Image 1 (cartoon, rainbow, N blue to C red):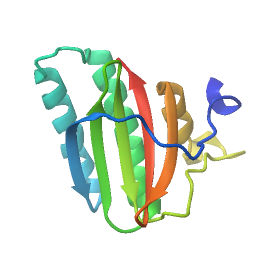
Image 2 (image 1 turned 90 degrees about the vertical axis):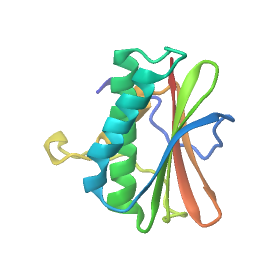
Image 3 (image 1 turned 180 degrees about the horizontal axis):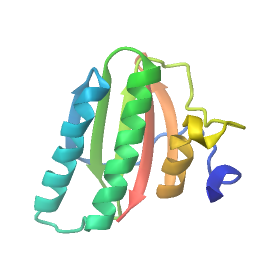
Image 4 (image 1 turned 180 degrees about the vertical axis):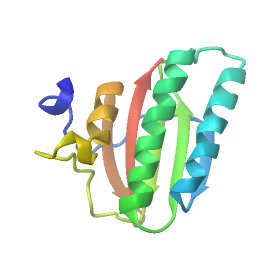
Length: 144
């Protein structure tokens, strides 16, 4: 991936304010197919029509990666949400590992996985994380 050297640092930062669109409370990875279906259905039916099929695919991919990371590594309840700004969609996922920043895999054989954070960084204009109220919040802003 081209972004492994640049643009992949997950810095501590707050995302921009958004209009909430979709949200889920998750407990197991097996719930993610329903989340992906919800995103496709809701954004395809969105009256504003700003979500192209390609953008929906990118949102589904980024949300799936972020939520599966939180479910596998974050511990406890996971909340995933999509919000909207005038120029982008914000994906935000929170878990209970408040003091554990997102850490991209380094020096790992790609066949062992662990490259999802690089992928999200490539898809997003901005990305970051912050801790609040005992939860870690990881976010990515994908342009429309």
